[in-house]
Length: 90
Image (tube, rainbow, N blue to C red):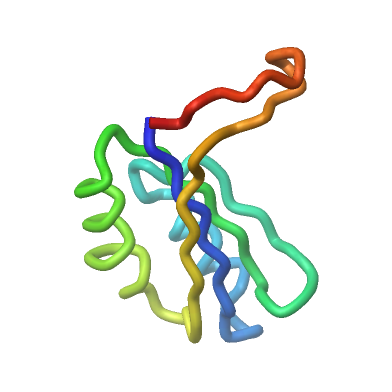
């Protein structure tokens, strides 16, 4: 499963509504309200990079309230539930 992590700067009057709209998009697994430079952290998990690209550019970034974004792709996961072992995320 491919994983993308998005950091989003949101119009402060629209954070809750934007977070709820993002969570309704198929492929979005989690949305976190965060402190710091960005307002929301979004976890996207899809079977293909093409699907992630489409989800981000055709759906997510077109939502009202998003002012800026940064996208990262996960290469490997280190999960306590897996005894700290590295898990490839491909």
